[in-house]
Length: 92
Length: 86
Image (cartoon, rainbow over all chains, first blue to last red; front, side, top):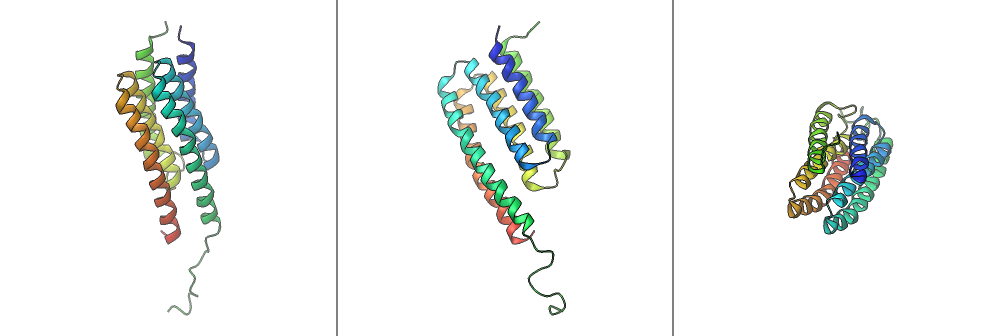
């Protein structure tokens, strides 16, 4: 009957489990985009096309923000020094 | 056999809300603040599905917009917090 609703249900459940169970940041962001696609499918099934317009404009913005943040976060973690900038002997 | 549309949306929202809340508290890799914030998007989407099933359109639109605006601030705050050295 509602084929789009069933596909959106499967997409939402799989995306929600995938966001929680993945450990890599890029994989988590990809599964989050999958989850939001399920939400847009549900909104379209309800024939709320204005809400679908707003949602499909906001979803790539959030994905881009998360990707930029994830790149910078990974770079900060990788380039962090093991000790502080002061030499530990001289700080005593 | 297949439930109607409102029931399907409502139960999908409930499942996402419960699973996402458990994932935020003790999910794998939840000690990292960025991963915990990404886990926290799952119960937010469950809440928006529940709002959709009750036909609260204006609330749904406002929730999606504020959720995106808050995401900018929180990602910036997490990165600044890691830069300071905490």
